[in-house]
Figure (cartoon, rainbow, N blue to C red):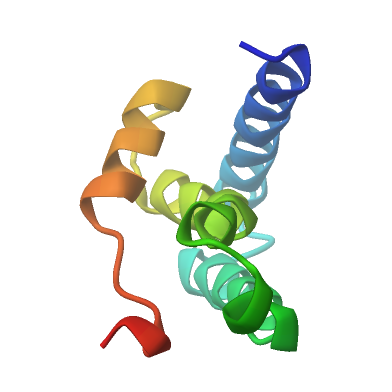
Length: 99
């Protein structure tokens, strides 16, 4: 596996834990975090090249961070990367141009 991928996996787990800390301190709510992550995914997938130039795998790659962090945000306990990624894959929805 590419070392950069492993670094990104670690970074996403760190961000997930920081979000958990912010929620436990009452600084943000689960809904606040979910809304922010949905907005980030919408911004990424709203780019013109998203539907015109990118393969489905590339689209999924762009959206993975927001989707994975949303799953982590909804989890009551810290969860490993493999489990989070599996959940993202199981709950993936179709893009607008796939319907």
